[in-house]
Length: 411
Ligand code: HEM
Picture 1 (cartoon, rainbow, N blue to C red):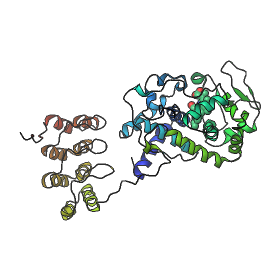
Picture 2: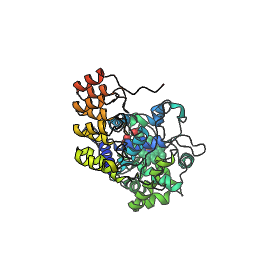
Picture 3: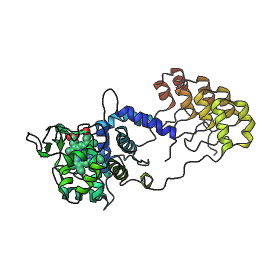
């Protein structure tokens, strides 16, 4: 799926608003959700991974490692409602990648194409995510299973440069860095340069820094400086933030697409953009959008007046109805005889668009022209339901009264 720059900017801004607002700053946990959705992947049989958004179902939803994580799903619910064409699986992985960027980290390439499973039948068994109480061997078992190598393991562990542990979620407590909402290489600096000792407390066994006794390292974090193969990478990232950013962005992007359809792979060749080859028809739709009926008539003969915009599936009728151009709609329905029931990428018909913005006369023209008000869009709204949601009660009433006059099939 390819999206325009404007669409992506709007989506990014909506995700930012959902994750960072006056109530909460949820970037670290969003990043963790995306990693936990992806980190169940097993390269041996292709099971697990972010495709399907299986974390919504049992048993994955109850994996101890996922305790408290689904709050992010609710935070992103409005994004899902606004962009029903995107799967939750895609929204989670995109939100995770953007969260890193929002916190000052590297730009992580992301591609769409995941779908949402209807149930938990593809859920992997619980226990595939790493156990923080263990050491280097365990990290290798878990991350090699996903197809990563030692360098990737160290780079990905650098995700702990943001966020913190919460006793109620994991039994551990505290942040890894003093600036835990900023994505930089201070996790590695702390790991390599500070002195660490076991913390004396009533929670899980963890380490704390000798100097301030406010920071945390988990046993798996300590493995990165205790293991001879891991340590050189931890030292590299401690002195060279660019190296960390490069390796992290690369590994995190691959992590997000494990077990996903090929089109999600950010390292694959960029698919050719959906190109508009028929410029005359595009021009016709543009005139319809501005209600320039005279210009529409001038070029109608040389254009395919029925053609939908490739990227959105929207016809000239959608565009004229959306912006309330009565004369243009009348011309398109009655002279050009456009199909009034074509649905765009959101499942909206031209009648949905007219109803949303309260264009009563247009709704009437469309209904007289055979528009079916019972067609539902991707949010499951027929025209009356949508009109009521937008307080357009006159149109809701009109839609309820109208029985569709679809042509009868020939016998
Ligand atoms: C290497 C094995 C890993 C282990 C054992 C591990 C374990 C943990 C644990 C126990 C917590 C504390 C959760 C809480 O109490 O709220 C945590 C938090 C976190 N982890 Fe990991 N993790 C690992 C790898 C990763 C990776 C690969 C990433 C991302 C690239 C990541 C990102 C995070 C983030 C951002 C938080 C903070 C979440 C928050 O502030 O709510 N972790 N991790």
